[in-house]
Image (cartoon, rainbow, N blue to C red; front, side, top):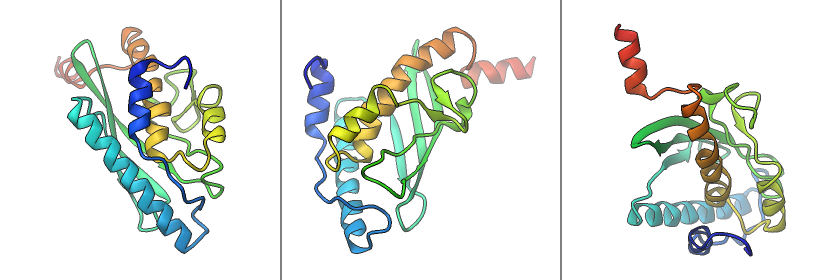
Length: 174
């Protein structure tokens, strides 16, 4: 954590680390891992709300906990930009991090793969590998998606690649 800003370091230390090394094919161990994932997500969400930094909603989209969907948002120039969020838990999880997708932004930035998968290879994947199995979904959101949104959304807005929903509605009305 050397070289990290104090806010990121503080946030990360408050997200519970996970202990169960299990993936979707591991039966009862996966169920235990999912319980840990939910505890970490709840702690991270509560921390964000208490710091007036609420920026995502996410839940398992299937009973097995292998597909997750939700919304994330970023505020830029006092305007809230909201995006659909989704990902699948890889079969090799937790050794392999989930590939977070923002389908609405597919093709709008070079820091994204086909299907709207955000690019996390250079900075996040080595960190995930080093901290496997202690990192989980909450850590992927905190250290993967959050910095990606902070880096990319202002550029996409300023370049006109994405428009605020009110701007898009008013241009459709004219």
